[in-house]
Amino acid sequence: MGQLDGKVAVITGGGRGIGRAIALRYAAEGATVVVSSRTGTDLETTLAAAGVGDERGLAVVADAMDRDEARRPVTEALDRFGRVDVLVNNVGGTVGGNPDPFAANDGAFEQTVVLNLTSAWWTTTAALPAMREQGSGRIISIGSGASKRTGASVGYTAAKHGLVGFTKELAKSAAPFGINVNLLCPGWTRTSLVDFERIAAARGTTAEVEEAKAAAESLQGRILEADELAGMATLLAGDDGRGVTGQVISVDGGYKV
Image (cartoon, rainbow, N blue to C red):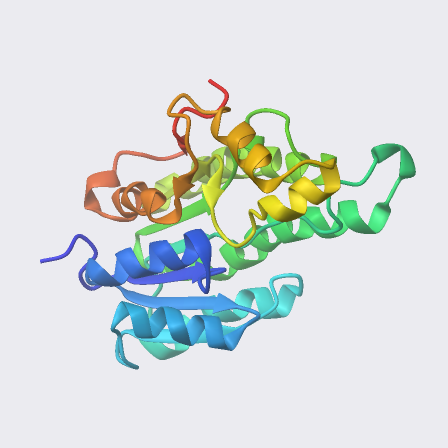
């Protein structure tokens, strides 16, 4: 018996990194998994690694920057499986790097906010009516160390801080209908988005120096692996997490404590 037997879970950004790790763990715990991203081959690789066929897996190619496409993973899950029990708003990142705020790069700021915050609104609002009707649901957004402190671009930090308010206010509205809403925050985690070669090139150092600096920002002195987030994501999605809502939870090795 898995912790998520019979559950249908939608994971955005499920082709790589933390989203992939959560999808694999959810599948291992018995869930049907619906994964989305812009790259179909990544999604198919995730489902193959999860060992789920069409009866317990669905890949949805969708661009989270488009409001209609962002809702498609949920609507297709409802069409195929008839319910959505868990939504993981994992998609995120930085558009345009870390621009100088004095340069007023409107495009980079706005797109970063859409990718990290507005897309979570689109996907969540697609799932809420079905969760309310079934009287239960779990919404888990993936934040960042930048959800609680500084350390990234203005747009990224603003968006990740925004997810804190999004989570708390939504948890209040959703609680009467049996829906829990939480924010899971990683620190430095080894994924394809964390490119120490690129960071080093921008700072005129080496990848080894930048990785060591990042590791030193946590109490454990290391970069976490993506699958280390999956355990907490599973607890929040399952029955053991029924008493947890409106919370901002870090799994980050003690990042900037």
